[in-house]
Length: 400
Image 1 (cartoon, rainbow, N blue to C red):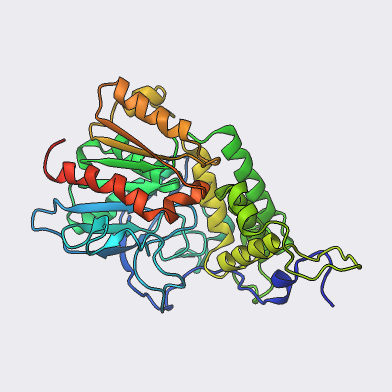
Image 2: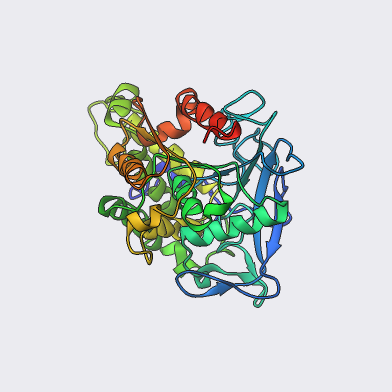
């Protein structure tokens, strides 16, 4: 008999305690770089890590002078598999596959594209599911808080490893845009261009509020076990909490228009003359699907760590405010907004653009029209590409 307090797809399916990639699993297209082997990697907010591994993928060929390298930064539940097919080691196809490849906006016939799984992630980079050398067990509850700046410093270690002194461009959407901005502020001499898409200079109160609810859904799941659940059997991990976090986020990624047009009031379960508490509307089935899908490829603790890093994001922290921070960027900056984005509304990208321009920096702003809300940075590949291509071409030709 189905537990009436749970939706059937989540309770009936034996979902894994963690969807994290583990050593011994197929590596797929991942490469790995381990650093901080002789001294600790000290984190911005306190704490440190040793023997830090960064998983990354590359596409194209690096020129002899390493001048054609582009760093693509992923969002909250992304990973290093930005392009390519699904298969062993990669449960889904590349999250920006339509933009990366020969002849595409990030043309790998001439560009060398790199994507790094962020510090704190769960797809090959050091995170809560990784084995801590000192204990031989997953970090779990002991994994420290990391920031966007810590993630960028880990990416810089990968750049050093690859022999890339200066990126042609750093490009990212959502949390990836936060990383792109921080690259411009932290390492102005190492970035020729910054493309920040559907992002913000500092997390807003509403963004933090939405994130807080998502994190609470995880830690209130009794199977989260305070963060130490990695030895749990399938079906006995915090999959309900993580799935609900994803479902809440999914609502904020799309728009009322899209939900109404796609689902309306259609029913997934028959509703006749007898009502039960968990007969689902079609939109509820959609949310359940996305919740379960994430559980199979992600880790609850990593969600907590990365989501918190997004809340902590504030380019002005410790730098005398946003204007003084953005004044450090010497590269041309492209900001891209989505007119229907209610999670990272256009005014946030406009503020970045206006501030950089007012400080005498080179700034370009594009707003695309889409019904898809925040997710348009992933879905509207033609429109995103139409903004990126001329911007990158101008950098390559030295016009900027």
